[in-house]
Image (tube, helix red, strand yellow):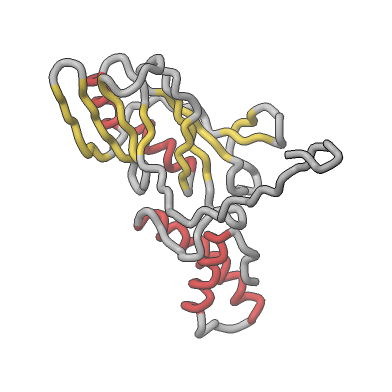
Length: 218
């Protein structure tokens, strides 16, 4: 559009309304070359087999879900044109990377040593992050086609990364959160110099704050 003088005039545009519809990531498709081999591998990880549907010779979908995950994986026939092994660095968030690694090693899976990085762009350093910071410790493994997975240890979420409601994907994660709260509460009672009768409220506040990425109680 132009003004009376012929100069162009910009028209105002309205910003779209904030998205309020829940959109939950449900499934990630993993490209594989041998469906039955992949099924044995992911079943061997201890993941839940949800489905194995076949329709003729051209279509098959197998669904697995990692323990405690809200998102599943699909692989099979007629699902994707991506090359087998091209799915890389798929993140599996865990509360204890050493325990997660040990579990897969016990299952006969080849897993890298746990490592951390000193800073952005720095190379890997063997062992967990010395301060055990969230998002800082990793281990990796691959399926038979070379699709790669990455364990990342997260115990405290960054601010704004979770909803206000506190929830846990499994009893194991809840137990780990309770242990961390118990250790922190022990230090709290040392500072108080007495038994804290309100420890249930303190635990609840600690766990909710930790999961939401807020400052922890002292």
